[in-house]
Length: 216
Ligand code: G6P
Ligand code: MG
Image (tube, rainbow, N blue to C red):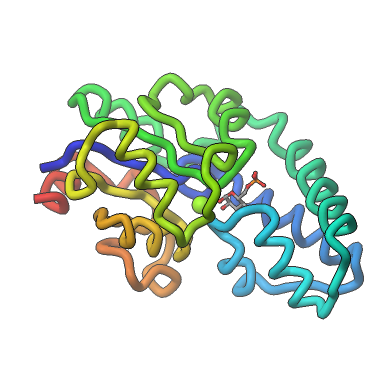
C-alpha cells in the first residue's frame, strides 16, 4: 500500500532545471565550448562536482582540483543569483495540489534532491512546510544513481521501500529509486525516461487513485 511519496526537486516540483542548464552553459561558453540539450539530460540529478567533471570532459579540459572548485563556485554563484528572485509562480503545474492532497490523506512526503540549494528553493516557493522529511545534497555522500538519497528518505519517514513512489525528471534519479526498490514516476518525456514505471508531462496528471494503483 502507498505510504509515502518522495520528490526530486529540480524539474519535478519547481522549474529550476532551466536555470541549472543556463548557468552550466554560461560556464562552458566562458571556457570556449558549448554542449547540447541532449547532453544536458545527463547532468540532471547528478551533483554539482560530477556535473562539472562531465562538462569539462566534453570540452576536452583537464583542470587541477583547485580550478575545478573555483569553476563550481562560479556556476553556483550565477545559479543562486537566478533562483534568488523565485517565488511560488515557479512551482511546476500540479505541484501544490498534489502536495495538498497527499497531506490531506496522511501520506508521507519527503524531498530527495542532490541540490545543496534545496532549502532555499523550498523557502522561496513557499512549500517547505509540506515536507515531513528533507534529504538534500548536504546530507548524502553518494550521488544519484546511487540509491542513498531515497533510502535515507524512507528510513527517516519510517516506511518500507515497497510503499514508496519516487517522482523524478532525471534518468539517474529513476535508476536510484529502482535500486532502492521503489516505484517510479518520470516527469517529462518517455523517450528520456524509458525505465520509469510511468511517465507524465507534469504532476497535474497525477491523482491519488493512480498512485494507489501503482503501489498495490
Ligand atoms: C539537482 C539537479 C542537478 C544539480 C544538482 C546539484 O539534482 O538536477 O542539475 O547539479 O541538483 O545542485 P546544486 O544546487 O547543489 O548545485
Ligand atoms: Mg531533477
